[in-house]
Length: 300
Ligand code: NAI
Image 1 (cartoon, rainbow, N blue to C red):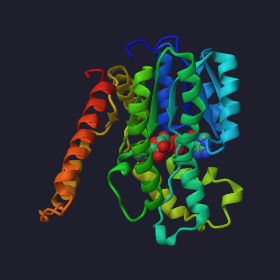
Image 2 (image 1 turned 90 degrees about the horizontal axis):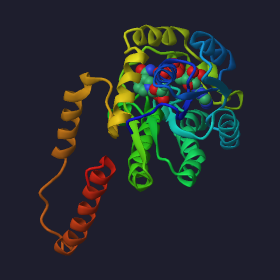
Image 3 (image 1 turned 180 degrees about the vertical axis):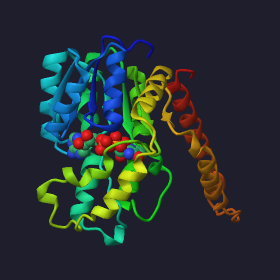
C-alpha cells in the first residue's frame, strides 16, 4: 500500500508510547486517526499535544468485545470507514507463571491477546465487506520469540499474537488487506506503569505492586527506542507490505542464535513406518505455505 493519505486509522493504546508515535506518524501521512485508549486523562493529554482536526479520542478497554464494536461504530460515524488498524494496546507483568493467579492470566491475556483478537474480529468483516483493501499491524514484541522466566504470561500472549497475525496474513491477502506484526525491543514508553490500568475486578489475585521494581523498570525504559523512530519504521513496512517489523536491529544475532538452538534440537531418528508416505503430504503443505508467503508479499 503506497498511499495512506485520506484513509482512516484506528490505533489502540494510542495515548502513550508506541501508539502515540503511530498516531503522530499517521497524521503526518494525511490519515484521519482514532486514538483509542483505556485512560481518558491520557487521551485528553495526548490530544492536547497533537492540536490536529483529523484525530479523535475514544475511550476503550480493548478486552471488551462490545466496547470494541461500539468504539468502531462511533469512529466510523465520525471519521469514515477504518481501513488501517493498529492493535497495539498492551500491559506487562513481570512475574513467573508459577507465581501467577488466574486474575493475572485474565488481565494480561485479556489485553495483549484478546485485545488484538477483538480488533481483528471487529474490523475484518467491515473491511472485507467494503473492499478497498487496508492494513492491520498487531504489536507483539521480541518476546514473541525470546522467553524469560519473568514475563511468562506476556510471552504466551505475544507468541500467540505472532501466530495469529501470520495466519491472518494469508487469509486476508486475497482481499488486498495486508497484515504485519510489530516486534519491538525496549521502548521509551509508559508500560512500566501498567498496574495503573489493571481493572478492579481482576485485582483480587494480584500481588502487591513493588514500587522499587516499578522504579527500576521506569529507569530501564528510559533507554528505550523513541516511539517516533518505531512509528517511522512501521509506516515504511506497511508501504512495503512486510510481515515482520523488527524495529530493533540489535536483536538479529540473538534471533539467529535462538533459531540455531531450535534446529539443533532435531535428531536423525531412523525412519518410522509411515515416514515416506508422509513426505508427499508434507511436500504439498510446504509448497502451499511457500506459495502463500509469496502471494502475501505480492510476488507469487
Ligand atoms: P505504553 O504503556 O506507553 O502504552 C500502552 C497504552 O495502552 C497505554 O496508553 C495504556 O493506557 C493503554 N492500555 C493499557 N491497557 C489497555 C486496555 N485494556 N485497553 C485500551 N488501552 C489500554 O506502552 P508501550 O510500550 O507503548 O506499549 C505498546 C505495545 O508495545 C504493547 O503491546 C507492548 O506490549 C508492546 N511492547 C512494548 C515494549 C516496551 O519496551 N515498552 C517492548 C515490546 C513490545
